[in-house]
Length: 97
Image (cartoon, helix red, strand yellow):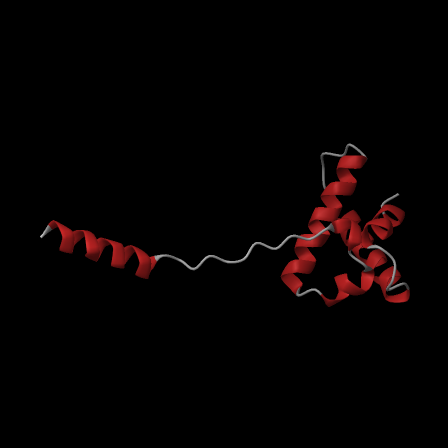
């Protein structure tokens, strides 16, 4: 009886286990403007937020001004359309000055 209960528990655990999603690693120092433009919306938002946080930490800022973020995002996207081979982090550093 115990072995049947154990087996049923194992089967239930396996059946109800959520499938693991693959971990994705992005080397931000190698992302070009063209690659950024081709990201899906969620990845683009993730990368953009990471870059904003990174640049804010360089400036030792602890606040976020949504107008500043929107303005710099627009500037970066416009710049990237004209310079698709440029590295995104360099663009962020130029725009975020």
